[in-house]
Length: 412
Image (cartoon, helix red, strand yellow):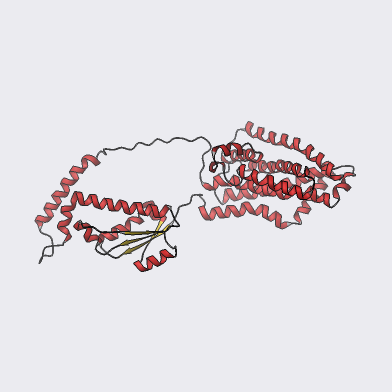
């Protein structure tokens, strides 16, 4: 036991001599958490925001109503409306500063009242897709609303289009009364369709299988954490070949303890690194990104033990190579496909179904799914115990195989 502790302490000291690598492994989840917080906020929900330039050359009451339509409701949170001249708006659109430029020509309001043709011009930013399309739909809706308003109340609107009669400051009482009666009849005629509505919309919520996702940060966080663990495994698994190159394994082979405590010490030291990485990542997820973490202690332990098992697997694969250079190539060829297929680079929800099913069968994909279960809700004790037992069994099976290969290369 003392020899095991000495081996683990030796490997920890060697890791501390490379603080840049250690800071990188711990810093990756912290940095990604900060970036997700800056992009999506503490709720993890991003709202697209664009800029609409409005060149109002008419400056009438109706043109101001049209420009104000883009600042109402949720659309006002997504669009910053800025009034500009047409020349300035086109110049800024050419620089890509806005989502769209709406040009309201002079005479727009009067043409709408007189039921005369009038053309609105919308210049869209081709580098954006969502917000310019929304702006175009709103402008189209306003145009259609103007058409129906003319069809229903065009005569009444034209009475007021030219202003009061010559020599008068107000409209005659007969005109006001006739218009009021016409609008009252129009309202009565439309009430048959509006109250109660002729068309009713009924919605049914279809529950999807699988755990509920609160935000994008909660969806991406477990994948990001296991991607960091895989990178750490990639960096730590080649240490046995490095000690073999320096002749340390051959000298340790003749000690009373043998190579068993040496390999166990490496795994223990690396497990402590995985504990540090997992604790830093889950702390950032919980307190910065507001990701719900139901079982933080179990999640940290699961991540560390999963990293230890993945380390043993990678050490075994590297020790099966014939040289240190070949071992490094094997490690790269294994880690990156595992990371991509096992949900490290992309969450399973973003993958095709056949690929997601295959990815969940990989070692890191299976461990990732168990971590998500620990993070998202109260997991049954039997399931948690079975998962840890499976990890222990995998580690117990991989350790003697890795030790056998370690002894083989130590005598080369």
